[in-house]
Amino acid sequence: MHRHTTFRQLEIFEAIARLGSFTRASEELFLTQPTVSMQIKKLSEAVGVPLYEQVGKKLHLTPDGQELAQAAREIFGILNRYTMSVAERQGLKQGQLRLMAITTASYFAPRLLGEFSKLYPGIDVSLRVTNKEQVLASMADNLDDLYFVGQPPEDIHVVATPIMDNPIIVLAAPDHPLAGKKKIPLARIVQEPWLMRERGSGTRNAIERMFRTYDINIHPRLELGSNEAVKQAILAGLGISALSRHALALNQPEQFAELDVEGFPILRHWYAVYPAGRQLSVVARAFLDYLLKRDEAMPAPDGRRKA
Ligand code: PGA
Image 1 (spheres, rainbow, N blue to C red):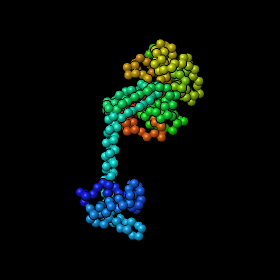
Image 2: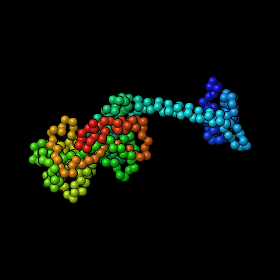
Image 3: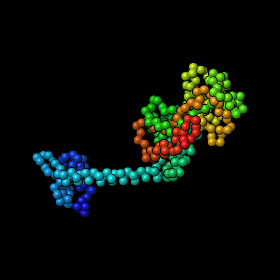
Image 4: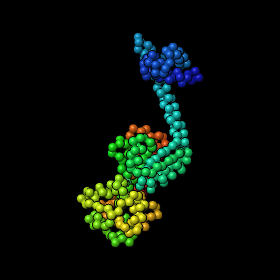
């Protein structure tokens, strides 16, 4: 039968089998009834056995007809999967990925993006690092593919996937008197001059929330608008602070003393977030999969990598 059968005929036959009517099949496929009848006649001749019978107005498939309808569905299923995987490979060869990261996420986002674009060099990547307000605005306008945030927004309906731990640790200058002390109580640490990130910072919110749960008020001595400024102020001996462990660049941990304070580290996560109504692009989906498959995805809470 193969030499005489066309995909068009199989498509028409599958529609007739599914809808139980020539008329409905012709409507679905935007064909005239005579075309449909003609194609089915040719198909029946090519197969050489009856495919259906008409009982009154009802159309019944014969067992041979049912088997053919099933074969047609399998063929179309295979072709669909093929078409999708070609589109996917094309998308991964030349797609675009637009990311936005909240301030502190800038310490790890470029590295992840760099690793990913080595795997898919044809993809055009962009990363904007900005504050919470702009992240929320861009999310509401559906402008970027994915957002890295420390706290998924509550007033926008989003899909949030935790991709990494984000411990907040207490940092002091290495010669600080509390360096090396064990289990420093919060009531003691709050007496130190605190350096705080600006209002609206996720890091600051997490610290304030933690102190509130212990019913302790914290009064910052200095407010500074970036992690870098806070780090410089710590090193200058102006006070202590708590920052995301990610804010210590790879070569910096030994420049600071991490203090062992009750309630710390505060265990948070980094999330990759996108608006719930958004259909992720092939590229964005591949990037998210990549993030979740990395060995260092969600390291142990103390910052060690998973074994
Ligand atoms: P941020 O970091 O402190 O720079 O706002 C985001 C977060 O940790 O939620």
